[in-house]
Amino acid sequence: MNKQKTMPNEQTINLDQFGTDILAEIEKLFQKTFSYTKPANNEWQLPDPSQVFTSHHKTFSSLETLKDSLNEVKNKLSDKQLDEWHQHTSFTNKAGKVIAHVKKSVSAELCTQAWCKFHEIVCSFPLLPSDALQNGELNSVHLCEAPGAFIASLNHYLKSHRIPCDWNWVANTLNPYHEANDTLMMIMDDRFSSLAS
Image (tube, rainbow, N blue to C red; front, side, top):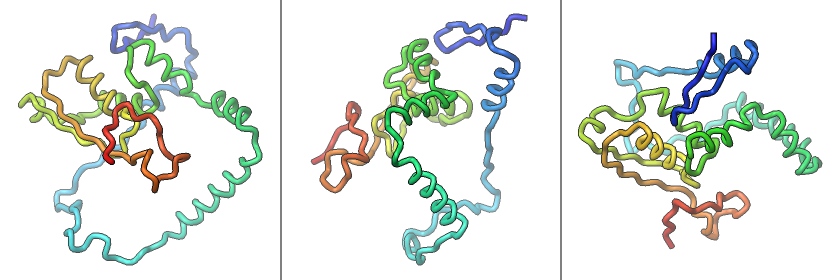
């Protein structure tokens, strides 16, 4: 039997070129989902604004131990040659070629790992509110959005699935040019950013 997978732009990929062990591993990875149901007793409630940030700092020993262990491992990497380390991580990254393939096959704008992550989520779960789509107006808020891959991915989804709606979005992120932010820790791609002074 010839197994085929149709991509969003109708391009077909022949899955027979992969062994059954690889196909099984792929299927297992893509079936890994978690579902949460809101409790009937309204347990999941935001605290009253007067109570927010009023409790004392609390540490969790298990998380502190994990943090120390992670930092210990990270410290062992400081003497590695950056180009060799990059080559190693690229080689061991199982999804390394996914982004290039997606970008080429569906003409994805600003295609990054985040773009692929959001697209997988929006295609797998009922993320968009049905009442908003029925009313023809969708509003979205994007937090920590730089450089804008979630916005670009949602735009691609709405257009490629021909979802007729007026889409309004707002986003925020750290200003990479603000003097209080460490420039080495900032994403410098500001194509989607409207920076305030």
